[in-house]
Length: 310
Image (tube, rainbow, N blue to C red; front, top):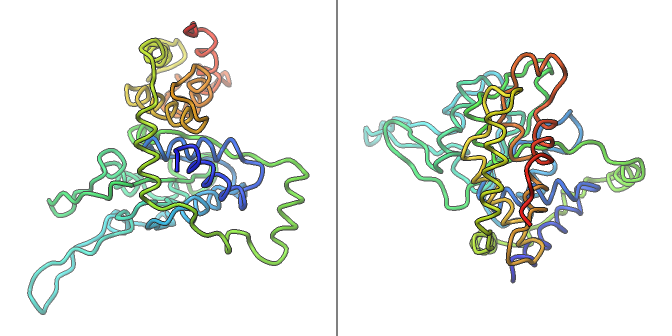
């Protein structure tokens, strides 16, 4: 199958469960195919966990879920070496991070120490346990959910961890008609209980390789860098977007172009996901925060100010 056909198959499969969230599904798959990770932030009950599970069930690959709690330890994620009295040796027992798709549910309910256990895995697709480097699978994707930080019992994610997420976005509430349809569909059972895989791991890797072949011009690369550099000198921002943000924006835009069956990236693809890729990486100064400014507002202003390549 072509990349677009694989994307449409997965998107349609997820849409059987998640109604009224076509744009969220598109962004989720763009991050997935571009090799990034996703942070879903929204109030409880909007379908964050269901969306993650629907993606995992749509692909014939390994999937693990970790429910993050205040007492969760790094070894609960990475694994632990256990002494075997029979051969008097330590044997490593892999943790849930050794999978293809990892759902880190309510990640900001765990302590910063436990949150940091994912840093190396997300950045380098490997973990260090007992002084040994253990590589993760070629296909490794973290989809984390978190409640807004003003909720009780949450810990803000460190800036270094936030920068490891290619995108952060919200689902929001669906409209009234779609919510009524959800009630009808889940009257007896949840649609996710009947969801089955429509593609396999090889299909996903094929789609990843095809996305990297999508052409992006030097002018658009310059456009991406100009957007991110503008955040670094903005008067309301203490820390702007890193070069990692430029890479994530380029790769996600290539994935979107492939979804649209195009051989090249357009400015529209970059603008479509710029806020989701950049906003969560920005640290606003105190004056901007007190005045009600948001990172999303600033990214949107930057997009309007930067000249779009012709």
